[in-house]
Image 1 (cartoon, protein in one colour):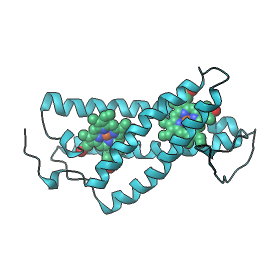
Image 2 (cartoon, protein in one colour):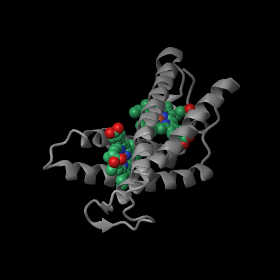
Image 3 (cartoon, rainbow, N blue to C red):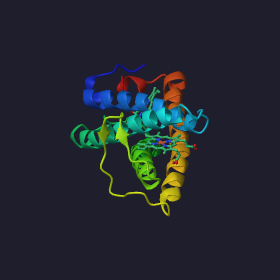
Image 4 (cartoon, rainbow, N blue to C red):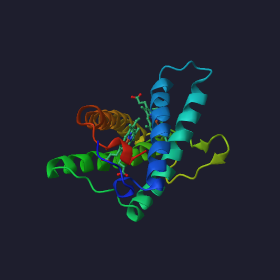
Length: 175
Ligand code: HEM
Ligand code: HEM
């Protein structure tokens, strides 16, 4: 296994944001799916928790985009095609981690249920109750959720391939 030097590692803020957001998304995603199965007396709690954690992901993602300008990812010693594939999957993960909370936020407002963040802070929305477009935002949110899951599966598959089969230092770049 190649020795890992600091030049081969993501910067500390990038690593911290990767794991914080990763953990929150792994919590938010199943919570979203469970909304459909939750009993009537707890369904609002599921909505609130799902939406509040999901909205937190949006703010952390905005910080992460800014952070990526300041702390560029470490260089990949890999053939060009492999490098482009990794960059494409990472770029799409960034994109869908922003589409997800934005579409969810617009959906809940359009359905007429504005977000009270963690039950405390009423969040201003550019749109109010709009029954005509609410199903569109919901559809974008649901489709994006499955695309995100697909991207995550590819991501983990690639990490496992590097770690278990090639036994290289890819995993250590982010920890
Ligand atoms: C990273 C952020 C998020 C992820 C990964 C996520 C994921 C999901 C998933 C997997 C579902 C179930 C979809 C299905 O039934 O097929 C869902 C539903 C839902 N989510 Fe999210 N979500 C996120 C953020 C948000 C935010 C910020 C809000 C609102 C402020 C929100 C509002 C909703 C609502 C209202 C539903 C019920 C279905 C609908 O009417 O659209 N989500 N979400
Ligand atoms: C759960 C276990 C996870 C592991 C072991 C893991 C591992 C890794 C590794 C090793 C890298 C660096 C790849 C490279 O240098 O080419 C990375 C980057 C990345 N991961 Fe994960 N990851 C996990 C979860 C997640 C989740 C849940 C998400 C989002 C849904 C995610 C999104 C990303 C993104 C966007 C990057 C690129 C970082 C950047 O360029 O800023 N990861 N991950």
